[in-house]
Image (cartoon, rainbow, N blue to C red; front, side, top):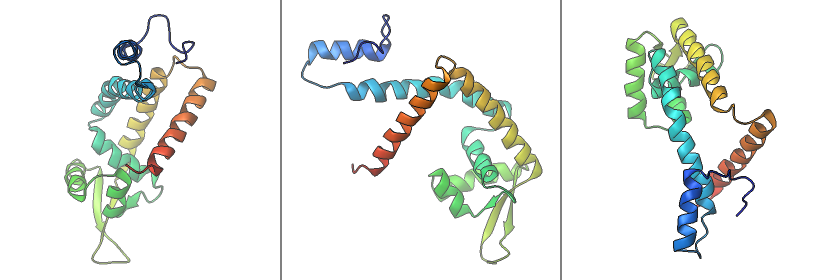
Length: 173
């Protein structure tokens, strides 16, 4: 276990690892060192990020829909199937979000020009403006959350997390 990356005042994960090392010294807790900290960071980052969305009249799920449509580029529209697959949610979950966003005037559902049986979900001008404003504010919050790392450290961590994510995507449970 590398000690040079652990501050003198050990974080809660390192304290737990030390306790487990004392109680069950034969168990490797390296997974806890990475995934336990990732979980803690996620839980710690959620409230300020969700506060950004709330300040823009959105919840995290609604922001996900708007930002997915915005990232799609002009004309900022996708099929519902494309949306729920991109968001990794059920079609029912998407239907609820779309109903709220449509009621708020942030999206419209239009018939597809190429398939009369299909609808397209499209950002309104207000939806695009809200998505952009919320995204900019979110990125400011996330930059502040990462201020404890310099640019090189952020790049290195992002690369390692990407490598881990890709290896986990390919892993069989």
